[in-house]
Length: 563
Image: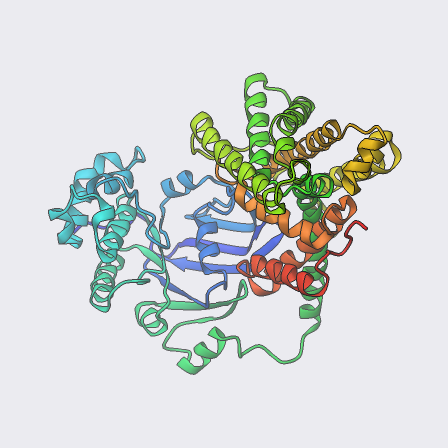
């Protein structure tokens, strides 16, 4: 079998990582990683879930640098070239290949088509017959199943395809993320035997492995990661097993904190509070429309999240058609969404509201259930309609502010985009509050909310007032939709997560309270960011829901409920 790896001088560093940190938004996932690998090295990266192992491999592959909300600091050198700013396809072309966690095969393609996809680069195409033969020699069962759809294969066979696909690009460095996860012991043994053959051909390998003993037996060097940092590294025959397991579980950390530890604790805390507060403005705008709907019309609008996505798609469509700067889009979309909200309230929701049920002497359950059923049906229509019109492809609003930050110090910064969102949210919510409390229309809305019957006696046309409130709610939602498109990618069925988020913020702030939406959003944002900073990304959502449950148990009306 010919060598898999591209030619590399024996003594030169194939891969060099210097002071690498990776961030998801403002959350630091890995910090100050330093790695140097020579040709033929096998590095085992060991650590518990959430330690940052997969983030490190994603950063090396360029997936963190060019993610929707992620970025890296530090340097990555591949064969002496700085690649930390390169796109993933260019890094593959330079000789790096990733076998991702969960295999991530093209499920509707055959074995052979998946392998050929790995040789897509022009430099690989002349070697396709040779590389295919080498993969089939390495994994003979793939030769017999080359036309089989990979989704119909076992997990072990799919792992073979994933490894073979990576090898088709003739990598000099190949990274395996959770190589044996979910495989039978016999299949794991076969995979590792073939891994040894691959490495003997001159490739440099990085392995993330849940089986600690197997990882140590297969590597020439190892490092243990904990909370995004490398806490122990060396050669497996030079460090005893107990020391490695102690580092794995974090028991090597000293009980007392050094000055550096205190400094980074303070920086993480300040970054978390600032980032969470900025995120809270975004959360507030996502939820204020729902708060208005309930506060004025006692209507729980289950289509609220879908309207956010509709507004985001309208902004993308307008910007694509006109080519104007992104911030012009809300000037058109906001009035359109106001008119849509007004029309839907007058034409549909006024006839199924709790007030309409009372006027018709229907049982109270009708006033509760009919709006839920109608808005749920509207949610389905909106999501399916967006799928038909825009397809399932993710969309976003390209802008230059997504990765920019205002640096307050060397280690303290604020996302420029989130700061803009917070300022916009504060201005909009202050304006809404002033409108509700200082204008005739605002007073009429609050009066109709308290007692629609007496409001009518005062000359207030409640059907019109409800429609105005619904239009304002949808106009507010359209600004939030624009912010969603600026900060992340979105798809037609993304409305439900935003609906749940809005419910959480409204519960925290108090139903019907505009000011409470801002405070609730800020509190939720800070709690989520701090939980992610100190307990890992998976803790963000858990901490948010725990906070909501705590408020429901101790103050069910919310922190700033309308009286």
